[in-house]
Image (cartoon, rainbow, N blue to C red; front, side):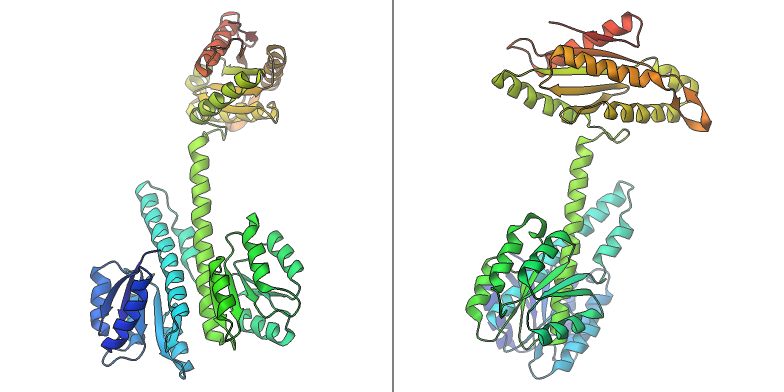
Amino acid sequence: MTARVLVVDDIIANVKLLGARLTAEYFDVLSASSGQQALDICARERVDVVLLDAMMPGMDGFEVCRRLKADPHTHHLPVIMVTALDQPSDRIQGLEAGADDFLTKPVDDIALVTRVKNLARLKMLTDEMAMRAVTSRQLGVSDDEALARVMGDEGGRIMVVDDHPRSSVRLVEALGKGYDTVAERDVTSALTRLAEDSFDVVLVSLSLMTADGLRLCSQIRSLESTRHLPIVIMVEPGDEARLMRGLDMGINDYVMRPIERHELLARVKTQAKRKRHSDFLRNRLEETVEQSITDSLTGLHNRRYLEGHLRTLVNQSMQQGRSLSVLIADIDHFKQVNDSFGHDVGDMVLREFSQRFRRNTRGIDLAGRLGGEEFVIIMPDTDIERASQVAERLRACVAADEFSVQGGKRIKVTASVGVATLERAEDTPDVLLKRADRGLYAAKRAGRNRVEAEAA
């Protein structure tokens, strides 16, 4: 992946070394030698991740981090603090300043690339959500509350998979204040629970006594329900070979033992936030797709989807020599409903009609709204006789009970229905719909509230 990384350090040799490592991984690297210069660059240029040395003369890294997090324009810019190995207090101070992650000197190459990639991906997700928020506001739709909840630092559900009792207890205690944390010692139980319940992050030990932690990670990645679940592995010093295998299979992050609490919290916080961001965008995408194929008033499929689906079914039916029928139903005298009671009542009638329409649609059929007061059912593997029976059942269901609308009023509603079926090799979706439409108008001419089947 590519991202713009700002390396901030007053020692030029450190800037060059970190820059070279990142450039080798195809990151676009910017540099700054002072805190003020870093703030100026962030204010005028696009930056995806800031790699910030904690100790600098004048304005130190902690103050730079505080200012970045206090500015609305850079508040969501990920910051990695580079601290001295023997100064754990720097991590606490960095957390208080708003740092997203830590690296210790001398900086390990694997840790550097992993942390930068993780936060660069998080920044991309954050930018995408911010862009969608702006678009929603321009369209008059507010997602502010949902976005604020997702982009905040609220906790989540964490699973710890570790069969060392004391280690497992310490991890649960470390995470327990900010997260709903559960521990599993058995990998089979862990996998079952992950598949059935909702979790934001799973921590897996690679030094399990009774199982292979990497195999569990592979199984988590292979299941549909856990494919997008962030995985953080816990690695023993000197086990870099298995660490690299884990990263190759898609592990999101790692922590080295002995595990330092603040480092663990930083890793889990990043992955939990990334999971919330990804889920939010995925759900919005699904909603967008659903909206593009659904009629907003009735909840039935819209004309665009119906026509595309009908084309597919016609081709399949022709190739396989199977029956396919269509019915078109139209509410009788619907204009009089709107003129007499208003469009609000008209919409209520359309919604109630669509509910009755749906109740009389079989599982294999597809129901939708063509537009206005016209509705359609596409019926695979259905000949004209069976389609006419479905149409008559629908007509009777509409006419049997009055429609309840505003103010306790009840309105008598009926529908006319036209039915057609595939009959010739040259029949197309348009021909089939026009034939059903002719049947509908024949029902209208014959007095309405009836079903007419139209042959070729």
